Length: 90
Length: 96
Picture 1 (cartoon, each protein chain N blue to C red):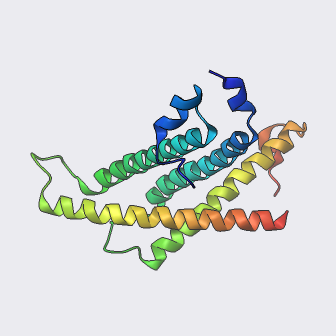
Picture 2 (picture 1 turned 135 degrees about the vertical axis):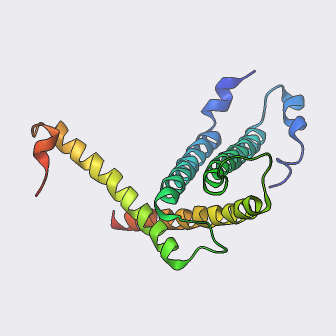
């Protein structure tokens, strides 16, 4: 079986990249739905009311903010600005 | 899409190797199945927690109704999260 030909195929390479990106998106949606359900959902009703829906939207935004915050701060501490607890900005 | 998806056996039988089109279609199907399984697994977990109290000898009517509603709400939540995440990604890309 000519596996060399298969992995060198640019069409396949692009396909892999596109599908991988789609999967990363899907995985994060699964994860955030899970986490935000715990934070936002009380008792499941006949429909998603607007307050609950807003909560989910806010939850997604804050989750991504948190992720970025953590990455940024980690980067700062890697640059040798002391221990983690010393780098609080205010 | 001119027949890649319709006959999975023809690619392998002809040349002794899988053609990329066949591989891609099969992978897409597997990915879709995996996502559906993940969704179902998390939905079952959440709805069991919300709807079933002390487990009895069977699921009573109120539990079944609750689970049915919960499934729909979980899908609503999933779609809301998907849209919100997509919006955020687009906003982030626009900034760069």
